[in-house]
Length: 78
Image (cartoon, rainbow, N blue to C red; front, top):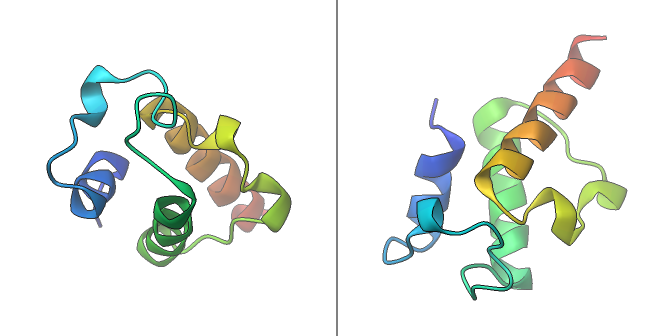
């Protein structure tokens, strides 16, 4: 299983996600990247991300994405 950081690196290997607190503001992610990221997260972690969760605040940095993954995993476990 890949980590969130590894999945991000596979989207744009040239980007330094670790140095950013807002991927959108820093130009590291766009809407197409988010769709690809959602697909990768769902496949990698065996989760389902709801359409209403596909908003910038859940994808603005690594910590936010990891929190979303945790939330989805907890929901799956219920």
